[in-house]
Length: 106
Length: 117
Image (cartoon, rainbow over all chains, first blue to last red; front, side, top):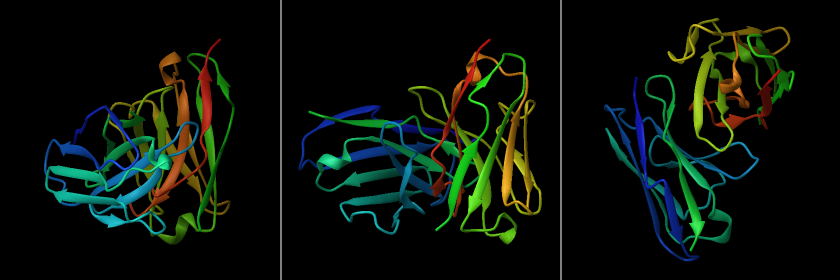
């Protein structure tokens, strides 16, 4: 099984901050990596797929990078609507999610 | 735009079988483009892939649940189904159906299933 390790688990930040979340795969997944945003009581929303491709309608302040086993999600300038929990997901072999990163208001 | 809607009992007794239906609109399960996925989220916790089905009928399951889970589909009704047997309180979760290029681009709203006597 492919394990996904996400860090940090919690992140405190202010509006306007640049935020980076890291995801590591237990084996190479090429670029088969997606990032999701989830707010309480709602299903996750796809932000990025193939490690760096922005889903249609997602603001350009979100970006993704990486390949192989190391990946990052960056929010260029944190907005009030961005306080949420973020998950990485590999879809190279079946599906596995990271443990999540909760972005809180500092 | 594809839409998915989960339905089924919100309360299941321990040792019984959890059965859910996902009704799909805006796309055809038989199109062959995507996998049709079940994912769950325990209260306050992360996301767990349960399994998925392809239009051919091929199914793939999370090894941790494989002995208890079955996913099937009715192409004529554009629905797919989840059955999880021998449930315990540990199976209490929000259950989502999903699909897409990542196998989970598009999600239903989710349905809370509580296992309790």
